[in-house]
Image 1 (cartoon, rainbow, N blue to C red):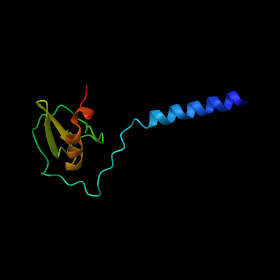
Image 2: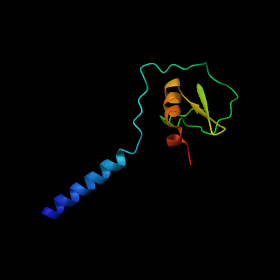
Image 3: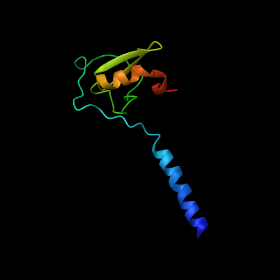
Image 4: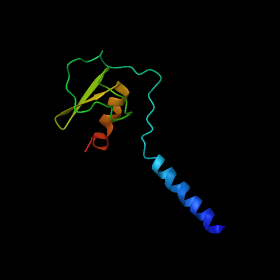
Length: 91
């Protein structure tokens, strides 16, 4: 009986630790952009590195990091990226 309880606890802990790896970014109430939609800009990502929304259709903001242009869905995500860009850059 004890071994079943211990096994369940270990499984629960491991599942919880895996679930916490997903970024928990919440946008502000209004996702204001610093500009209108940007057209004809080549970015290295098709998904916002902060919130993982697709950016191809409604690219709002961009930032340059190590000579590469990254696209974002909002000014909020762009500012989050600028704080620690190395954390979000695809390897």
